[in-house]
Image (cartoon, helix red, strand yellow):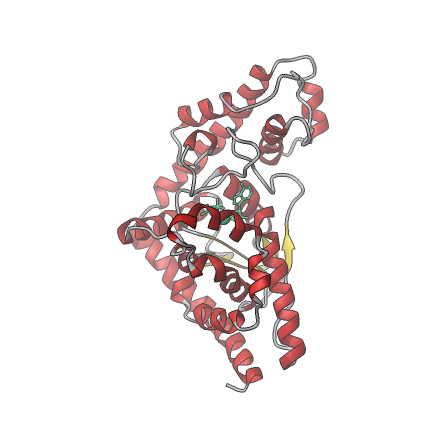
Length: 329
Ligand code: ATP
Ligand code: MG
């Protein structure tokens, strides 16, 4: 057993995007093997956006196959489905009771996602899901959580609640840290760079690169990305959000730093720059899609999930036992 634990998850709420890959999955893959690594399919979280059951089931398999296609290695990482490990629900329930309404009200994800639901009333699930995320993280004694910037606040909530619980009931939970890399932590919508790229709640798919996008379609999305009239390939998140976003995508995929990109494109037009970004993204997607098609085999995926749940459950169970004992349950 390695000393430290890394854990992350994605909601099977739609097709995975370049944002999910660059903001969370890539960072996880780069570090798997140096930590005790867990990656899960956050299927309980997916029911905060109601879906047809067949579609949800397919999205869950797609998500596992996509993890594998992105480089998650079942020999180095425990891959499991959240709803297979019942401890998530119980500890989530317990952690909800450690949380103030005001704390959940302050969550920016709740604020932005609840706006879209206002007409029919806001679901309780959307309000309390961060406390389930708290449980997801605490159950495995996690030390680092690779996520995008949008989830940082939820990891901070996890720390607050773990600390509160430990103070009230005695040392029970391990304190996790968020793991966010400076580049690619918030990939923006290509058509509206004021918003992040999302896999769901996206009426207009032109601004989102899905990992399963047709390669030509994906290239066109990059070529049509909103930029500015300054005509200089320069990293400036104040005045050149669109260009800066494309630079982040390029840099995160190839490892080239901003200075070097700026130098290479000095005096050249946006067309040439976008063409290179489009090529790099196209190559990445081609590689991922080839692997995805190989791994999208239900028997193989069921076996991985079954094994993963078996391996994950004992640790989750121990933590839950500790929490119940601390509470006097
Ligand atoms: P949804 O609309 O369903 O919330 P999402 O794209 O936000 O879709 P999540 O399942 O909520 O996906 O998040 C999975 C992981 O991907 C999280 O770690 C999240 O921080 C990260 N992530 C999501 N979108 C981006 C983005 N645009 N840039 C960087 N990271 C992202
Ligand atoms: Mg999200």
